[in-house]
Image 1 (cartoon, one colour):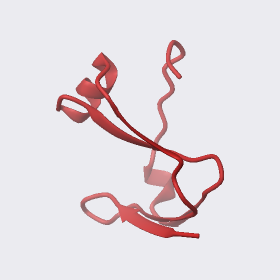
Image 2 (cartoon, rainbow, N blue to C red; image 1 turned 90 degrees about the vertical axis):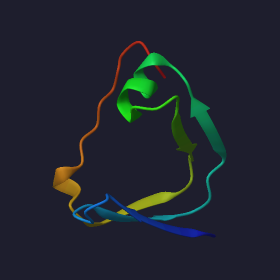
Image 3 (cartoon, one colour; image 1 turned 120 degrees about the horizontal axis):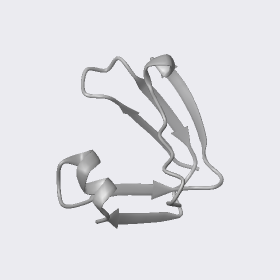
Image 4 (cartoon, rainbow, N blue to C red; image 1 turned 120 degrees about the vertical axis):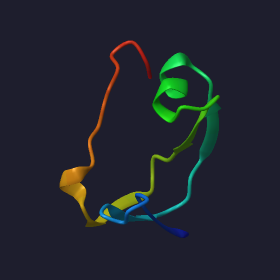
Length: 69
């Protein structure tokens, strides 16, 4: 099993993911382009990996657009 770690640029939010990713997609929809300010957004998908917050969980937000997956 693979362990991945990550953070925001200022390191206020830090996390680890235990497990492997099954899929990787570059999405070019209008929402992903607007969110990233680029031509696409990089998305990793996993059903089995576990996310563990190291710091800043309260600073992270989630946005779900009803008409998308």
